[in-house]
Length: 363
Image (cartoon, rainbow, N blue to C red; front, side, top):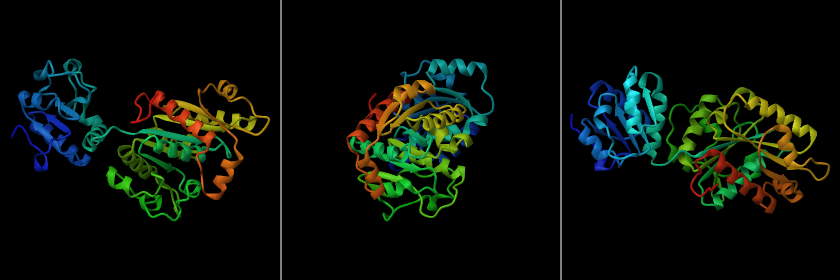
């Protein structure tokens, strides 16, 4: 087999497959096709070394791993792969090569397809933030919209997703109900790996902020939500998902994909009690949890005290503002000063917690 196979037009590939094992190579090519990634194939160590510095992802077969030591340079995005079972020595070779993972196709096909797709898209995966309103009036939808609009002013590509297709709050809040573009109604049967760029460009927008909501849609299957969110995570810098509080118990795909979960609540006894239940439900889902506390006009607890009561770090405080409420009622949300401060605090905290800020988001 030819040692170097270029994509159409001789363009440089984002994925290199380094293996001389024809059976393993056939499997890896099949995964590249599923990920819509065009690979370079290097069937000998010399070819692999030539391509090593240039690709976003280097997949090294177990047959060539020992022959590539020491690697041409230390880099991220190296995966060592075996078909069925990884010999103990393969993990040693993985360490020597600086590999991020040593995997088997038998167990990790889906993960490798995702990594190939990310490399083929030529961009890092977005930071995904799930926002859960612990109770009504906590401002979760307002927070999602405000953070999204502020992120756009910080030169981030951002999408806000309403994970409750029956809600419609974000559609009205951002005044895009009559704008053309895809809704959950069009995506309820989605499955598998969706193309990131066409989906991103097909969504309605307000002031540069993309939005995915619904018109007349019933429940959307978890598989469709996962497929759509996976594509959006490849198409944007920041994905904000407005998640209903009851999804915290059921394990929504938004919570599985999230890098950070923000729990929005009010600074009163009812809000604290509701937030405590949500935080308890979220314990099983893994992502770090942060708190956003909306203070009332009077009689509210201090947000720092609410944070201590719940044992959850405070990301931002959101003071009550009658003008913001009136804006929302009119479907004309304006990111006023208090919302801007909260949004800036959220973006800064998310960047720090996620550990890999989106472009333009700095801890």
